[in-house]
Length: 367
Ligand SMILES: Nc1ncnc2c1ncn2[C@@H]1O[C@H](COP(=O)(O)OP(=O)(O)OP(=O)(O)O)[C@@H](O)[C@H]1O
Ligand SMILES: [Mg+2]
Image (tube, rainbow, N blue to C red; front, side, top):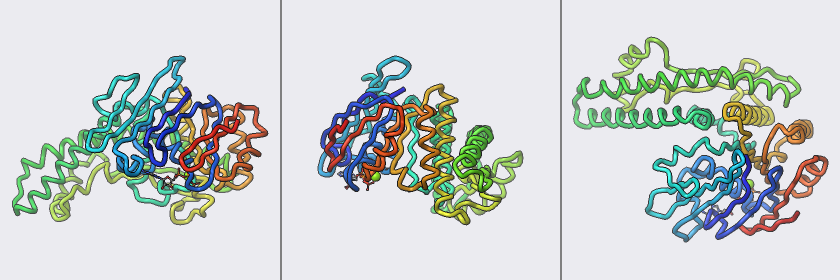
């Protein structure tokens, strides 16, 4: 699979842009704030139907405009496919594949897999359990569309249960019969999510450990775990937690509380890992993400590398460039604020490299 071309209208700092890509390596070069990451985000949007950096779709609209659209032409299994994502203020987001609108944008996720590596963004390591759940949910959802649908249903049931708990508190009464169907729903859907996460983690763990060992010359031993409330006595746990749920007006038991501790030499990386170790671990997670999707879907995801060389030492750059040269990856998009560095790195590689110069939302082809 590769992205042949991209057209933007009023997307972030691009009033309008049209880019044709190499099927191998594409570099976006330009000063800080010129719009390099925004281009990667537009590609990310075509895959996930949302931005990697903005939680609200409307923040992707160019300031003072009323809509944005992103259009991508993909080559997938020797067929040409067109994806369009757009938003007009006050209207529902539109996602179309080959001119056919989806009923739900979530149905599109996973069809055109993408992996974004932005080593600066260490939220998944240093952030909360919610950041880690989001990270793993995005990977599993891309590989397994049923998982995403079950997750959406779970979150809906959770919202309903929490709102009922709030109503009980506001009206100062309690009715166990009203709460029970929602608790059952959370147990039923939660159990499916738990099993999928457990199975996924088993396969994923090996991939991460392998990549970390390769990147770090095996200087530390890392481990990835899965912590969940789920077990055979989940009903008893819900019963036990009821008092607390009523006081706090929210559900305190369930897979929405799962965490995935990352350990290095048996200690949490988020507390004890150095900055470089944390970044290396993040890259190992993302490379595992790439391998996992490649294996599950039989296609190589697009790889988006945002400022990656900036954060790595020479050894790790060499390792990554070796992977690029070995054709482990498919199509790659790279950003760099220091063009000479990227040019130096890719000069050595026997692959087609297309260079774009970015300046204040304007794109120029260099070669
Ligand atoms: N909705 C929007 N409308 C207009 N401009 C926007 C919008 N969202 C972001 N921008 C602008 O886009 C620019 C940032 O672009 P981007 O993050 O792509 O830069 P970059 O080239 O990756 O920079 P760096 O090298 O610092 O990472 C900022 O100037 C920001 O103000
Ligand atoms: Mg950037």
